[in-house]
Image (cartoon, rainbow, N blue to C red; front, top):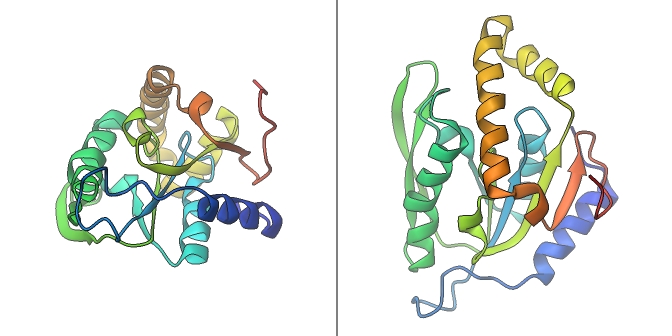
Length: 202
């Protein structure tokens, strides 16, 4: 999924117009404030492409939630917990965040990545816009696509051997999104082809 120029420009404009909420109140130095952009939605919907587009437009670092899950069994809840503890909590306190990337091939945590305070930060992936981001997010974007299309995209990328993993992941993320009400809380919704979804549509 590649978002068209008009939609992308609208998202970038909304980010610039939103207040920078990181670090949190009372944190120092207060002049180094960050606008946090969270791109969430079920696997295979097109989040990674949009996250990259936004990061380019904003000249921003992008944190991929895929790097924060400890494999297929961890699920969006585990990734969201790592995002909160390792990246968002330090930034909210006015410090740099740091996380280790999970190597899916080797099955272990790999190199460390710093997340320094900066004008913008993009986080993309399942669990990126869990409720914990609400005090700090400048923009929460939800990207969706139907299950058949998402599974097709996923198996095209990961191979047919990953089908069982994908089906279990889709169950895990459905439970996560039901609990977090991520779609309902999003500021903007896009479909899996980069088109805006009208507010109030089910």
